Image (cartoon, rainbow, N blue to C red; front, side, top):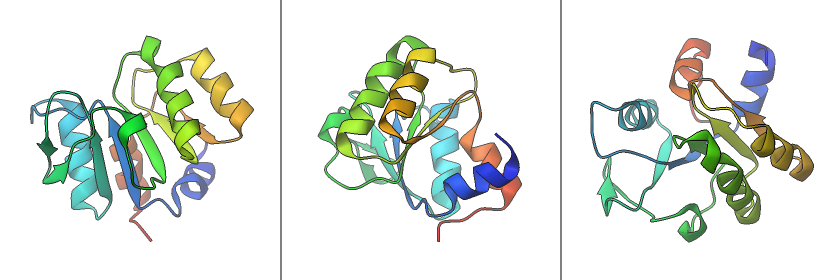
Length: 136
């Protein structure tokens, strides 16, 4: 995906559900959502291992999220990605982003069939920073 397509995909993103958000500051699954939060995005952490992260209520699963999200950012192993994408489709999320190192042909097919935006094997924090994007 080129920069113009990434910019278009992310143009109206304000709220990001982070599946696999970590409580450990040294992990990318904590540092990247924190950076996005610092840039002005609302982070909705999804993890069964905490009640609060980054000053936000944590939801045990994506199916439990009761607020609208513009993007689902995934920090989980590739074999879990198809189920996460199914849940994202069910909740009405218009976009899914699999973090750097995560790819899944099945997850991609589910997203394409549902007609939602899909990115894999890229770091959302790096791309948002590099493109100079902020929530609109």
